[in-house]
Image 1 (spheres, one colour):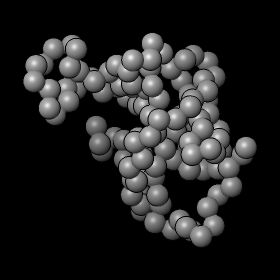
Image 2: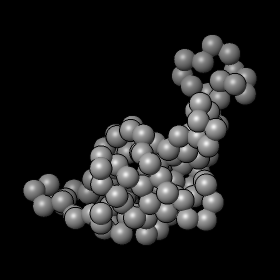
Image 3: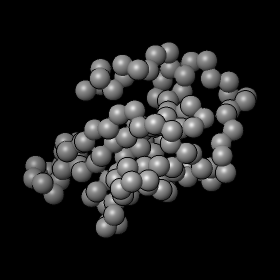
Image 4: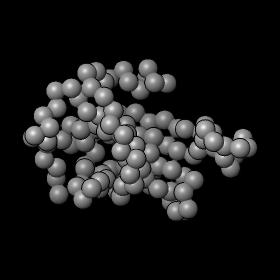
Length: 120
């Protein structure tokens, strides 16, 4: 799976985020259209890839349906060209699930002093 997920990305690295984000859906509740992270709105231009994670947590004492992860991942490109991986965690206490910004792609040639401007 990692080979498939990384085939379009060259010359950079993933930066772990692991923060809850506010997602606005376009078609269905499980498909993100935009998200707010650290008070900045990111409009999603394209969903590059989706996949499910039904594996068990590393520390799971029992291996049954309750101890499985229930996540749907989305690799997205924003309207400013940034790439993020978000997931919808269906096991949260929230009936609609919680959205998490899992990681952000940082290309090698990224200009840290002049990040892209986001729409507000």
